[in-house]
Length: 349
Image 1 (cartoon, rainbow, N blue to C red):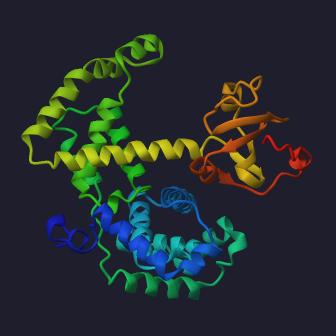
Image 2: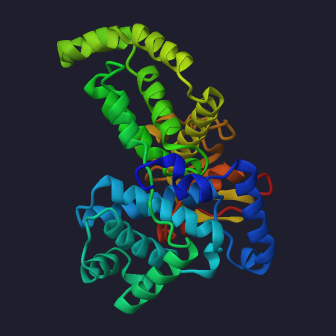
């Protein structure tokens, strides 16, 4: 059963529609409204990105392969469809998910090593007791009803890529896109082969254009140039293959939209760091050089990527009037004392 997705518990018990996921989260909110009011969290897409980043960081400390990390991310996602996050220590859940996923994927790591690396990564969170991981492991497995086998899109990609004459670069890009899909609800919504086909389609479409290749020909190898110049034919061949196959095209298109939405919100999340917040959505934002340079600081109310520019300050700090989504997407860090003198009470703000 584990070798066949169509007979697996992943298909029969852990695949939902978007409406079903929304209903489950709405029910969780209704049952835990007091906790929702007391501990507000960013929207689920942002939490998914954050959880993925933390799991990858922990895995890199122990040289864990990508597939066990992907399994751990799915375990966390499944667990929180049944349990409200505000009732748990999510860092303990992530640590336990990595530990369990390594055992399921047959690359076990000693629990003491997992505990030590988690304590180093999150020293302020009190993950310092092996028994806590053991208890959380039991709770995690019980919540998922011991349905632990996970089918990933990597196998489908490896099977299909040679037959579609995908280059090494396109295959690598497809793998990266598959890695990205664990930031979303797609593992709970679509079969692995749909994700793999979507990743291949996006990888071929997102290949460099002919003009870009000509501009960078000196720095690019001849085989890579030839591969990209053949991109239109490859897109047509892939499209013809998808049309002739029994792949669910509407699901592929829906997954493509999910990817585009993910990349948009991820871009906002990486634009800057929130240094100090103020009422009415105003915040001091420290922007990377390239984003700061893109702002026209001569126009105080000019629309910018994150919101409305209010005032420029030292060290790439700017007052931004943020939209709700962008405000939530910023990486929350401790307030910078150097900005405390820049508060304003101007009613026009």
